[in-house]
Length: 494
Image 1 (cartoon, one colour):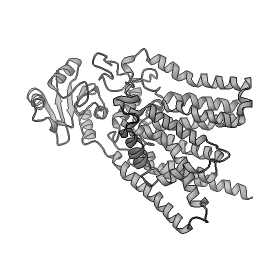
Image 2 (image 1 turned 120 degrees about the vertical axis):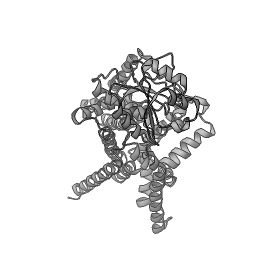
Image 3 (image 1 turned 135 degrees about the vertical axis):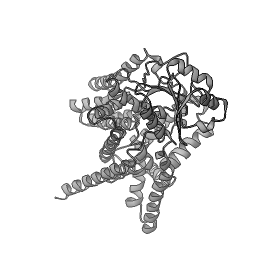
Image 4 (image 1 turned 120 degrees about the horizontal axis):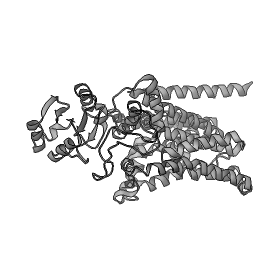
């Protein structure tokens, strides 16, 4: 009679965690696309929107931006955006098709993916450690402010984390059960996950450890099992191989990626360690006060069921940040993949401090109080770092609404903020992202070049920065002013 009650209690607690996770992820769900990293979100969101506006074409996803991705001599006249296969974008577009274009729906797909991640984390950790650690891990993933924000962004990353956790979970199940259903489930999740981002490839390291731990050498050397692994590997990577072969025909639509490895020679320099381990993992994700939980979780002896699997998982993350050093230093969202394994080690540390710490060496009241305060401070200080992520770029949403209402639906727009496509997305028009660090800097020559390409309107939220310079005077003298506020300005270039 006791066992069923215990299982029900645990399930109710997981449901409670999921409800909390959903609730906190609804914060500012309907804000315009002008928040943190909106420059990348705009590309993802525009692909989904253009599936509705132009018709669904999975093999030729398009953004709003004509600006070359590589160099001026490699124009992207078709506005192709050939990064990962647009599976996430397609799911968003499906919702758009039935319910209309709404950013809340796009964020909702990411939120549902994160809730799925919590479920996978819980059941995987429950099967390889304990129910208590599993609940802690689910709770950390649900409540870490960094995790909350990046669980509702319009990016492929939340979906990638979800599918990579599914890949690990079903791969383990296949190794344990060995039936054909488990094999196909493991294969399905692997094929999806490996198409989304490169990080799931690094998870081959802990997954290889699972093979040796669960099967052992005796099974592994058996012809039947070797063949099954070979089939799994080949079919798993086949979709991404085919995708890469397909997009190689359209180099103008492939975003540059060489810089991600070691641009500027940043790898292993002091700044590399400061940005990754101090600013990002230490402050942004763990709020400093989460470090004791993490360290204790790392230091505890592995359980019989999990072995060193989680440590190898962490090693795969460390290898990933070393390989893609410049990408990880430049973009904080690259560290999203740390959150699941970080949550596991935080969970092991929290479970030890709150329930398993030896009373012989610790004062129970003091240790619980200290652990509780550390937990509160971790969430509070991490939130202090993350809260500005929800803030909007000044005037971008207002300028976009003005352009959308004051210009024809087929108008071509040149923006003057930066290479960031957020303003262009908010305008709901095709065009060119110009300004700082773009191929169309705020110069007279850029305007004339854009006009020759077909640009009809110019909009910027940065006019005060060059209003009294030659470029600002040129715009005012030569072109009709449509609207100017303290937030933005719009010129007719026709």
